[in-house]
Image 1 (cartoon, rainbow, N blue to C red):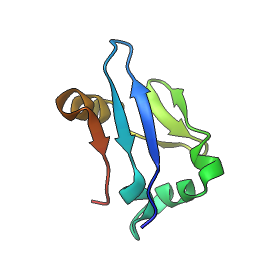
Image 2: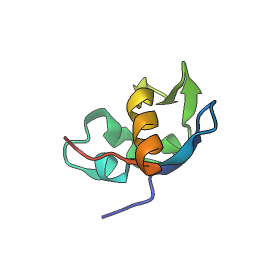
Image 3: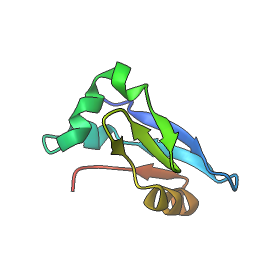
Length: 80
C-alpha cells in the first residue's frame, strides 16, 4: 500500500495537525479522490473558502478536519 498522501495544516486560531488521506486515495472506492494518486496533482492543494482544495473541485470538509485535529492532533481519512 502506498502511503504519504499527507498534509500539515494550521487553522487561523493556531490549531495545527496532520491530515492523512492515503487510505482514501488508494482505496478501490476512492471515487473522485483517485485523481490525487498523481503526486503532481496532489501537490497542487490550495485553500479555497477555508477548505483544502485541489483542481477539479475536490475538497475536504474543514469542520470535520478541525474537530479531529483538535481532539487527536490528526485526521486520517479512509473509504466509507
